[in-house]
Image (cartoon, rainbow, N blue to C red; front, side, top):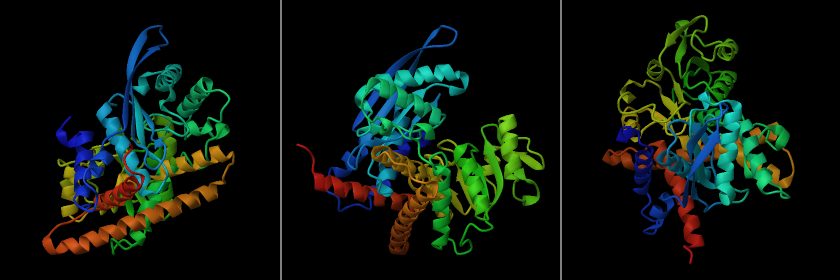
Length: 433
């Protein structure tokens, strides 16, 4: 992996850029906000369906608990590593601080190929991971959630295993993203994609791009047509935008003659064939082609490091909305900023998931369920408030820096907003003992 794509490099650079705007913070506090509080590595022997034993590496990083329990997903992917999990845990800390959610940051993962494991094998792997973590997770310490290649069924296994090891307690809040039947929340499965759309809509409504004041008529390309991309595409269509191209791991499709895609037909085709490629009345394109399309909004909703120094010059979108975590490298940030292309950062754009996870946690503690319209209304309000604060800070930065040629991006503005809140709490609480 190149240095540019290394997760620890991306986090260090982003943090360093925000640090330049935080000279009022006491020496040493910022370094404390960057370092993880706890890292755990476990070996997970699992009996496969054929009777053989395979050992997998699992990781859980608790980055920060200043604002509350650690919060972050569990991902299954062959490239899961401790540096990646640590970087994503830091992003969760900053995301929760920006959204003013009373959680800290955490993240976990298992290095495996879930596509090569049966459901029984994934269940055994999940249960072993939870058992090995033991009391390092809990309703008031560290709360997992779904992530890459994990879902509500995975979270049901997490809950059931933890409940078996901790009987006689209300353990529903130990994990979020659960099925509705066992304490899940309305709106959780769609929350990340919905939050992307709410954030993009608010950004445009604030007039940051005069020629694009709303989603109405906006041309959109989506890289990654999983849960996030699919939900975002549907909601963008409902808001009057035109989804002209989407892609998945096998390739992409572009609407012929620049027209919008038929999303109903696309969803049926994806369900039947396992890919968007081959949809009737479309032209097949590559993921690289999609990133370079002439469009208004580009939503990278797949993996990290998709827009980098090698392809950022080819991007033609007016705004990139980071549906995934870390899809744009710091080097690409510089190129896009110099070209006047805005990046709505991941800690804001994809914060819908952790926001509704917080609502699920509250509902579990209160033994109460909120209706879907209340949850979506609360989500929109929180996303709008965070977007307003980020844009206001960005405008203040850019107006003062234009005189000397500097240019602060939305990501740096969002990070400063988050880090100042964390630093204020740390100063008030003090360093123990």
